[in-house]
Image 1 (tube, helix red, strand yellow):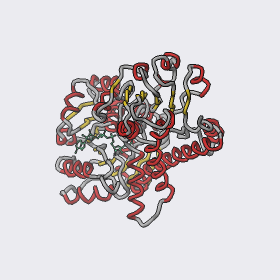
Image 2 (tube, protein in one colour; image 1 turned 135 degrees about the vertical axis):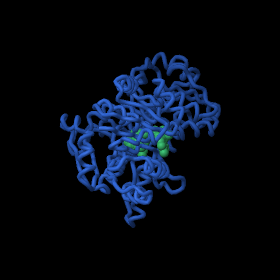
Image 3 (tube, rainbow, N blue to C red; image 1 turned 180 degrees about the vertical axis):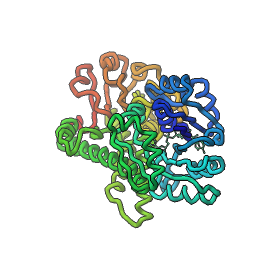
Image 4 (tube, rainbow, N blue to C red; image 1 turned 135 degrees about the horizontal axis):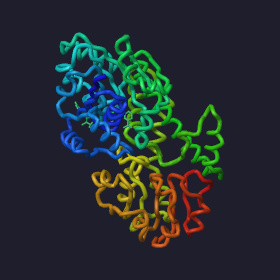
Length: 436
Ligand code: NAD
């Protein structure tokens, strides 16, 4: 199958490389010239485990190419995937579809008759209908429009793409269904469930999935607050409820609130869709509020832990990316935390194993350290913000030794109070009983 992928970001590049690995002929297109030039020289624009080797293998076999020229990339494609960004629109949180519609207008001029246009970007209900209308307006008569939302997680994107829990295809006609079934055939052979639905249903399924996961996170975060008030341990509560098959153990980790490029914008976009439909989605609305409050309240924990005043305090921050195994800084909980620490007069030394280069574009006035132990040098407190594997096995004695204050604020519950105490550190986790 000949496939064009418009948008070569986290989703487009991973999806394109995986489709090529399935044996399809894929051209990944992006208007960001530096990105395409870099990819043509074997340089990855993002950090994602296993991606570089997968891209190289498929480029070497001649199945994966990169282009800045949409016309060139799209002209012979039987399926054209759209994987451009759909960020939250400033002000109202509606999904901004400018990039999607722009891409559709461009591809209308060059697409082959009968091609299937597939939204892989997360797009609100009804976007497929609008794409159809644009294509007709532009004089294209033979085409199909399908929805195939992507559920991969950054940091585990290739494994997720190749071993998905399910593939959702929203297609109104047989041809679109057949083309998508053919594209995903290697996964059916591996028995990945495929769910064929109406297009609008597929579009909504993606938002419902992300909103539900966001609800789970905010739920356990509120339970963590209750644990602190009544002297219970949220880790054990989460395990106790998560072992129930009806609940499941995932997304029950109390912490600094969800961030990243998807949950914050997708929950807001779902609320907008509901608003337009005249339906109140109280659970999701409250989840958004709970999460916003949570992210902005993390600084209070650090302030309390250092005695109530951050002025002149040096804080070591471990982890900046919104989660481990990615360099993605979009909506990371580290951003409001560090910015407020600085506003309140603290000095920040930060370390992230991979996201430091991205973080340097965001933070002004902080020092970046070469490793976790240097970030602790002279610190009044060390705060674990992202649970990178390398922070799970720190030598706490070595971490504590150069610190000025002996305080560990563990926003990811990586350590226990006892482990910290053995190194002479006062421990402040999330929901781990009544704080000292
Ligand atoms: P991204 O910002 O990493 O990549 C988008 C790319 O599209 C950019 O490189 C941009 O230059 C390019 N682009 C924009 N307009 C273009 C055009 N007209 N022609 C060619 N290229 C164009 O975004 P992402 O994280 O890959 O997300 C893409 C979509 O997938 C979003 O809708 C997102 O919600 C969804 N999604 C993301 C994830 C994730 O984990 N990142 C997971 C599932 C779904």
